[in-house]
Length: 258
Image 1 (cartoon, rainbow, N blue to C red):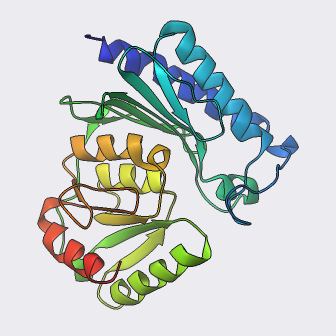
Image 2: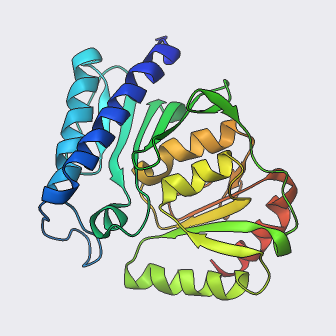
């Protein structure tokens, strides 16, 4: 079953921007819900409202599509197409006003990512990609960095803040900090799209969910970022990305301890 992926991207960019505008407008009046998987896994009524906005609009256009959505608005489908939605990746940053967050929407055909959008509401930046069509930032092409040596590279790190994953992250940081140019902690989706734009030379994400990385991974891949995990394919347990020239050095360091 074919689909107009460019048309889908245009519609979804609009939805992501609309959700981002809602997040900006409601930031001063948000209400927190109970933590989910652990005490640091927070959710607000704005997360839920954003997801409802996105999923309901998508299903008004493609009612037979499935959806996997972080805050519970997923549904089964019969078309073979699935939407992967994280309405607010980086809720802790959003709530505490300590860093960036994003709206993430990806479209899969079977198990293959075909279109993706990551929108940063605070910076008014929209990253997107269509499978085989390259990556864009606000409509302009973007590319991975040239890949400096690890000693000069800026590396993004993302991880779930539960006790087990923080221990893993500690091992990785102890390995990378002495040998890398510098490290930034950012939410997983922005980690990947910053690599796509050449702002980060490489990065890694530990113990994510598919909705955290699905959109960013396609955008990164289309910009020329090399992706993998413990094997040739990245997973939610371990996602490593790097400019091609940096890949061997960075991935070897991370795989040794992650």
